[in-house]
Image 1: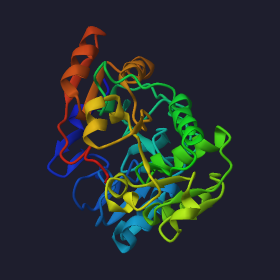
Image 2: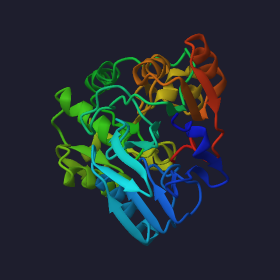
Image 3: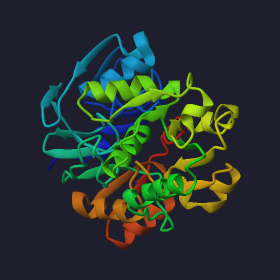
Length: 336
């Protein structure tokens, strides 16, 4: 009988550790060998000795951490398999951001899949999530409550373009995380026909350039930080949520503060942030997608790294699936 993954995949103070393979997945502290699912700072930490990830994630880590991105780096493409001390490791798309990957591990006939963060919606900036059948599926649960049912992203973005048409004398400023959300927002606006330049806070420029280096078309992007106020009238500007909420945005011409986030489903959250135009656009799976994924991977047992574990464990139990909360420290923290 194949060994149950709980006998060889365990939670440690540093994070999730594959014992026979001798590696960690998204460890929360510096380790000798790490496999990184994607480049967000709660998953990709600095200081590891050896790092394995997709080429895109490694590039993101170098852009953000420099020398701290790993003493040695090894790229593994989607669908490629590597043997690590008898553990077969394959990376499959997670659909979260550029380079995001699920880690598929097989050892002595047992298979476990660690998803990292993921979504099931179309995203022109990264390959879609690929369900992999397994014995244990390790999932996030960021939006694991029934209230979180995300509307179509294109419909949410149309609200922005409608507002731009209604208030042409104002500058629309969107708060979006610098890795993933900003680039997806740009791609959505292009798909809706917005051909004018999109202006960027300086903190977004390096990663947008990196996306373009990997073949993701984003159209004309210009730096907003050095632009004069008159040139931004009627324009769309994107910046990190932290910058949009401070005096940087207030210097613009009658700015309309917008925010693209799954948390905008909660009206009080938008109100507290002074958001005039909330857009429910998320790079995480919503409640129906979490349950659909549980069905798709056909795993009799699902482990939950972070988020609303109790609600998801209850819903999984109604489906005859055993749920387990891992309580991994550090995951799910806001990037900015």
